[in-house]
Amino acid sequence: MARVYNFSAGPAVLPQVVLQRAAQEMLDYQGCGLSVMEMSHRGKTFEGIIANAEKDLRELMAIPVNYKVLFLQGGASLQFTMVPLNLMVKSKKADYVHTGAWSKKAITEAKKIGQVNIVASSEPDKFTCIPDLSKAKFSPDADYVYIVTNNTIEGTVYQTVPNTGNVPLVADMSSNILCESVDVAKFGLIFAGAQKNIGPAGLTVVIVREDLIGKAAGLAAMLDYKVHADDGSMFNTPPCYAIYIAGLVFEWLKAKGGLTAMAEYNRKKAKVLYDYIDQSKLFKSPVKKENRSLMNVPFIIGDEKKEEAFLAEASKKGLKTLKGHRSVGGMRASIYNAMPIEGVQALVNFMAEFEAKNK
Figure 1 (tube, rainbow, N blue to C red):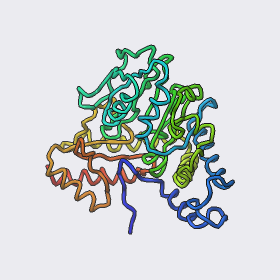
Figure 2 (cartoon, rainbow, N blue to C red; figure 1 turned 90 degrees about the vertical axis):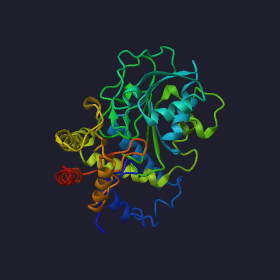
Figure 3 (cartoon, one colour; figure 1 turned 45 degrees about the vertical axis):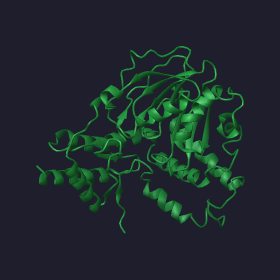
Figure 4 (cartoon, rainbow, N blue to C red; figure 1 turned 60 degrees about the vertical axis):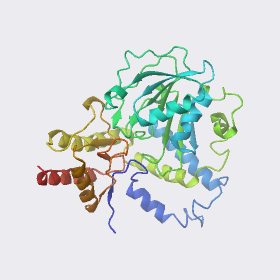
């Protein structure tokens, strides 16, 4: 069976060369006679795998030496709880910017632990933009400020990082990490579920400044960043195979020229799709232009029957998982790093074909 173009928001498309190499090494990893799935996480072979993965990620993102890189489990959703448990320790309050479904879930969990101030929200605009933060009244004594840099469902992205002064900035980067370069030093903590732009589901990457960990008392060990940092992400058995695949993705990104080259490629891909949507008389983007995501592109027709027909015909042509999130409807193309520009062009070609038949 031929490979399809997978526009899923996550678990998402992986580089084909990574999948091919993983297949080649499935039964025998580099001559050791067993699969990465089978080997001890305490053995030298896996220690090399996780060390190389961290080294390559640090190189790709230019992560400063005073930041810890953690490979954890529980998905990004567990971080909605771990962040406030570990960081909401002084004033017991934090500022949150509300930009969609995932910030809403994070706010709900944080409220169970301390005081949450929603300093800005794009809900009045139906989450079609990022709110203006120049007038946001960040609390000078907040333990941290929390943002979702790219909103997977709504298709919005921060073009600039808010200046929070001396208050640590926490960012959920699950759906746009590694799509372009970021200045890690502007953040106190970054986290990302792997299944969008890093690797398979089951792995969560946390990048946290050293001075922010070890301040919370009485935490369960599995919820304590310091425990995981002190044990090199191996306090418990880590998601070994997911880390191995992530390491292959990091190698692939380096071979592609790093994040500067990847950002240029992603902008080129996104332009192909947005340019077509903007000139179309059938398809529309609900997102304000200045906040459009490079990774997740929602679009609509506005006629439910036509949208159902579009999705059914697209699937038959090998353009898969284009249905919008159940909370917003319409369509959505997730065009992560591993989506080739040929896939985006194939989608645009089909959109033009469909539009010609549905004037």
